[in-house]
Length: 185
Image (cartoon, rainbow, N blue to C red; front, side, top):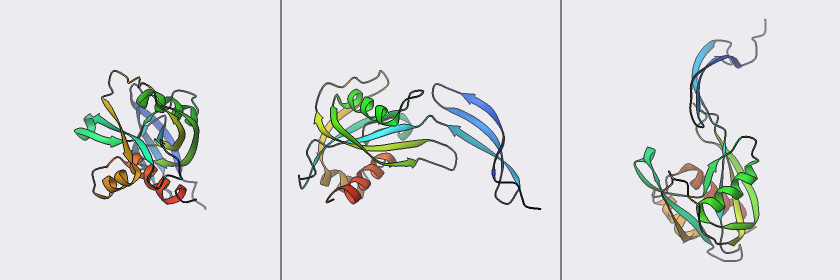
């Protein structure tokens, strides 16, 4: 007899917060056994690399954030990002977060890739974008956001990744994806 397909058999919600939920799922593994897994359910997010200069610039300028993160016990280098609102399109979220966190608006926002942040225990996906044709404005930070907006060159942020100073995964993936697959095309 062929085993039933792998997947969720049952779920029990253990916690529901402002935007995270913790479920305990009973799952059928690929070998047919049943296991219990704790899963953090997340609505997803968008993040965007705002380029102030075009691809013709040999060392484009990027808006970067220095943001306090309690979970990381300090300030981190990041690109603008935020959680998807219910029913919100990821591209709309990228535009919204770019404006809220940096004050900037973009003529063009293009999808780079989508990543799972930590698939061992969460379904969170972050949609990564890059923005061009930037018009700078005034940020509208939320009460729990402590952000400094900085203009940095792509070469500098790549060096900060290489030296281990940039440790935020979405930022690393977006910047390396941009440098590796969009620059020079």
